[in-house]
Image (cartoon, rainbow, N blue to C red; front, top):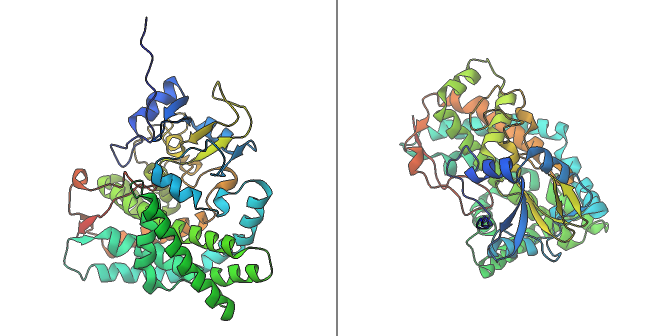
Length: 400
């Protein structure tokens, strides 16, 4: 009699920054909708096929509301952070649509493109300042994190001089090893800080998101708590994810000089290269967690109503049926834009146009201003953020 196959634990560890956990490929081939064990002993379903993930994330029979019984969490800290998050990303149905529509005017292509000259100036000044320093220099801290943090502050109306505070508190909120008490303290401090800004914008309006949110609180479209939660979401999502793509994307090109040459020679457009870098880095590597509201048929299995599941968008981004040779960086990949790095369905990233613009500006400038850029440390010696909701490195020392 054969022994029962053990249920694998989730999340699964990435052993290479530019490929998925090895278990994803095996599960995709043998059990594309598989039971997995979570940190608290509960189980959930893990989906690893591209088509199945697209199908379930566009279903109206799923929920993002973390307070529903049996919603899946990645760790005790993940549970603590998400139970305190009542932003639009935790909403379903009409309420989610209403909250999202309120913010769309700040993320239109026209508004984002109007920011491009400012972002270009910022990026080039940062790079020019970088090369005045004595190497090795931490590319992540001195450049990657500064670009999206500055842009997010400008868009929201958050003083950039406070960036160390909100980066520190945001890092606690996305850590899988922080205690619930630490999560609560960081959340309260962030919301208190944003509450002060909201009050300031009510008294002294400006052309920024905080003023926009303050106006909607005043006219009754949002509660004060809703406004603070959405501001917190935009502040966190506006810098950490993009900073990690900048760093990992730069690292990937340095590891693949032939692909970098295709960009710098003009053979491949920066736009297409960005899509491939988003795909292969997949920094939101453990999303998306949802709950089935009804029985859902997917991948030859039935996910019963009330069961939690993980639609692993990073697994979708390395699905061989959609992306041939997925572990190979191909900046000219014709299907690159089919990736799900920004999620899929009604909850896909609201700020994706902003992230794409920032990444394009960075890629157009970084190897132009610093043509001799190279890693000062073997990739095997770098410390990766396996314990964070967003994959990346703690530091990336470079020289030139």
